[in-house]
Length: 328
Ligand code: NDP
Image (cartoon, rainbow, N blue to C red; front, side):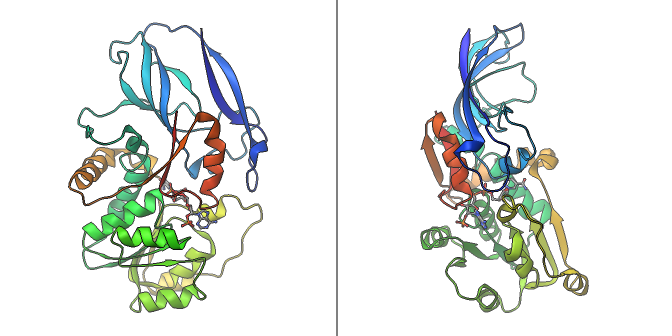
């Protein structure tokens, strides 16, 4: 019998998280039935959405999440031992699958790229950037695009895509080091939102004629302020609202409805999981751009399953530099 480890909720998630919200336990996996495979995690991912996914879930529930895993035992001819797959059993070292809801790493996956990218730029965060910029934001060459959370896993891809597609790209990030990195990626203008004295005036200075597409990763006050910089026919792509995930009190915001109305602005939220039909196109395009050297990526790799909570909490402090990955 195989022994696995899993991270479960220690104390239900409310407000900012601490170590007490996480509990590591061991568990036994049963023997395989026909058609089943036993897989072992190789890379896991921590993502801001997990904070929302686990809201109001009780202590003892396994924390949700995706991983790249390797088949270590198989009673399913489709998945021989050694096959790498992407699966979502949560924060666990081992799991059993009957093949439903998992996907093999594409045979065309570039051999020279790390498999961990299947959880980032060539996975959930990359395709979110792609779907947000194309299907939702409908960006066009010559437009001015603003990306908040520009140094993050999604934001860095979103901004580079907009540059590749011929837009003028502006962005914000939380430290000078991140600003320098985003500039290296080719963004036209970036500022440190924790440092500039007047964010409103900074944006006005960078985009005196307004923003065509705002790709929003952060929500909250920052994004409410951004709305009034939108041009006529502007599109707000609501990809994430990380500044709100740990809040416990309801927020009060100024009304934006008149501005939306008189400037014909579209605000469109989206969750990538609702656009699965676009995944193959997204991954093929992102993969091509990486291989041509047009799209760069950065991973923030934490070694060790035991460090998952630490890596997860770091996302909400802005401590990660690139896509947060856990290496087993
Ligand atoms: P990141 O890799 O960018 O990590 C999170 C970053 O968010 C931090 O590094 C920090 O960057 C910033 N941040 C943290 N706390 C705050 C805060 N209170 N206010 C403003 N910024 C903050 O994460 P991802 O790129 O993976 O995710 C970005 C957003 O996209 C998240 O909101 C996430 O939930 C969302 N998302 C949505 C998807 C969808 O399908 N719609 C799919 C994937 C992600 P900094 O230091 O620059 O502030």
